[in-house]
Structure formats: structure tokens, C-alpha cells
Image (cartoon, rainbow, N blue to C red; front, side, top):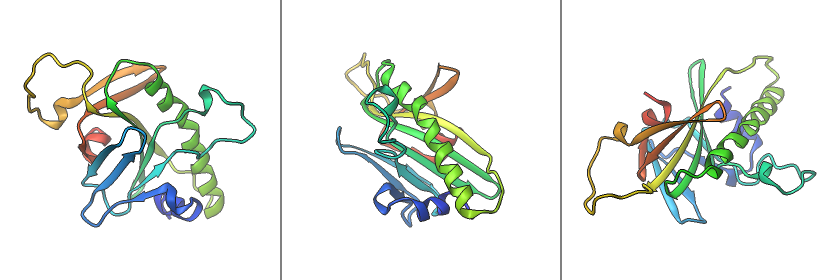
Length: 181
């Protein structure tokens, strides 16, 4: 079994956003009314809404309870890719979205461990993890006219707490861009 299919068995249906038959996954953020479409995703891919997943009721309120919006799982053969995605209306240089991505990593480990116990096959999955902030628009606008760029030109990387966080500006992103291909 794959991690994406195992997650379908353990998570509530409202926490999973399956890939559509046309190879797209629509990620929504109700708070900002933002919508991002991930294109070229295989039908086996799954996006997990991380809201209220992995929060122990025994934890006090604090920054440790803040997690990103989505976890995208892509299984292909022996390889599993996980992409944490934080959706933002406007891209800024603020720390909180980056910190949310960093604090989401334990949730992947927890979900992976639950799936391994449930499948009882004894195999430990190797997962390649990436972190993305996807924004509808950039924070700084110098010109009044939009300049069309190739998708790869809209991707930037920044180091934060020993992890690489990539940013993308737009409402339509290819899976290859999220996977760094």
C-alpha cells in the first residue's frame, strides 16, 4: 500500500482533498478566500488539510499548535514525496508562515507511523520532504504592469531553521514545480 492510500483509511473524509480526474488538486484557504490549483498531479496523490490534525488536547495554546494549511502526498513506485504548503494572499518576509511550515513536520512523522502500524508490513517508508509558501501575489510591486514570467522564475528559496523553504507566486502551480523538477 502507499502512504496516500493508507491516509484515506485513517483520516476523516473532510480532511482529504483527492486529485480530480483531470490531474488537478484544488487547495482552498477559507480565511483568506484563496484558491490554488496544483496541476499534473497523479490520481493517487492526496492533499491533507492539516487544520486540527495532530493537535493534542493536552497541549496548551501557543505557537506550537500553529501548522501549515496542507500536506501534499505523492507516491510513485518506491518513492514518496511530501510537500507542506502554506497559502498566503500576499507574500511577505514575515517569520510566522515559515514557522508554521517548520512546526508541521512532526505531523507527517505521526501520520507515517500510524499508517505503518496499521499496514503492519514492517516497512519504513522513505519520504522526501519539501516546504512551500504559495502566495496569490507578491509583497512588493514596483511597476504598475504585470510581467509574465515562466513558472520556474516565480520560485524563490530561503533558508530558515536548517530547512529550505521555497516560495511561489500564483494561483496555478504544477506538481513538477512543487517537487523541484
